[in-house]
Image (cartoon, rainbow, N blue to C red; front, side, top):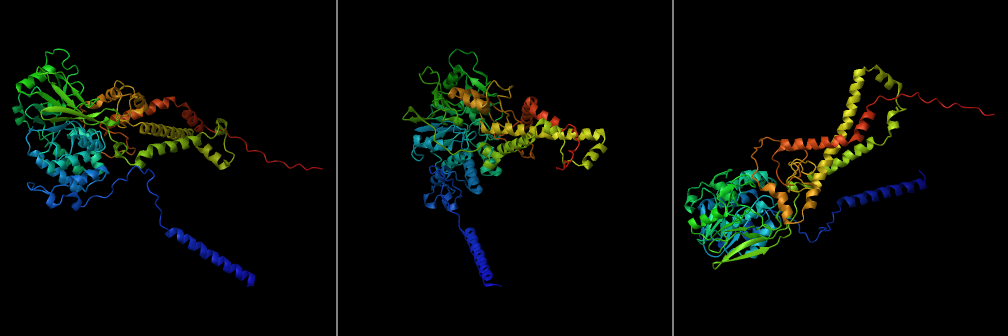
Length: 579
């Protein structure tokens, strides 16, 4: 080997070693983290607490409490940063709270200065604002009128925190039952889905059991009857509540149902009424009670007023017509500001201090965003990805002109033509029909993903009242979306209220099959589907309606399934000698 070749060989070996060293350096180099792109948004807490963090130290526990108490200060901050508990820790809070609540009577007796709070509906960050407005829990007394879960994305955090406060301050916080504290509504709306996503079905079932232990009414300072919904024709005196069995599901009629579901009538006190109670058309169950019925109930029981929740209010509260004692016969308190992130309403709490009533209003706080039904980003993006894939397939089918599709390919061999000639007419027709059906299937798939993508972009739980028969305006209930039309139509509280009124109704009970498999294409609904078969039929109707207008896809399918016009192969070019 010559000297020149030897030097070239050494140079090549050296370059190979340098390349390997450079590649190894890149493989072993640690990734560099540059931090969160949005500095103002803190990272969610991913670590679950240890028992030493979860429980109060023994020295701080109450001397009269036989159990270890959860650290409410730690839990408040932990939940605020979207932290979660171990399943046994969550179950500990729920089970201990169920035991404490179960020992309380149906009718609570609350005395002294008290802050009365209305519906919370899973708005944990607004609940923190409520305690800022109402004052520290250890120095103030609170009475909650129910509806802690559903429709918001943080119902389990609200429930666990309030239950923890009940364990630590049993004589400073009183929790009552609302109509959403039941199995039927939590399956229909969002709470069950939330529990299954964040914890487990065991936690959800423990919550349902705890709901049945919640008291259903309270007397504040022997002057005010506090309840979630309202009064009932079966409630003559307060003594009737002592015989009520509250440890069950409310049902759609009876005293327990009325306490949770009844409302004042729409024209409360505007005109005399011979009837004390009329059927509640808005709720689909229970009653609307009249001004006369409310006054008679207050006189029979020597009370001053009825304090209730259950209905959203634009300014957070509403005072109804006064009694002969010049005091409002009914007061409604609503403590969930900007309800559903759409109402734009204020929230309020009622502070009863030194026999005087003060109403404190507050606005909504920013909160983390959750995708509908607590889906992850990958699942949420499936309709978008599928829509693009279908578009690509359609674009491929549209590459050729009609003349090009009708002509046979020059690359087709004589054997291919002979094989086609040997087929019978029926076989040829079946092949053509199979090709046509495949092309139409691509078009149908494209329409399915198009509908899912549009619904995903415009998800909302609000529904347009009066548009039940118009599928172009009312979305699939399984998809649970309402399109851009509804969002553009909301101009304020009254619009949001009118679109949402159908969700105030007691849903029909339709049990789910226990072994029902999850859908391959998940719905972006804010609400759990309750009519799966009906929603599928509606989706097919929408596809078929759009298919009737899609003439381009039918034209492509017909062209591709036609028999080709065979052309004679091009003659070879002849060589012409030149002289």
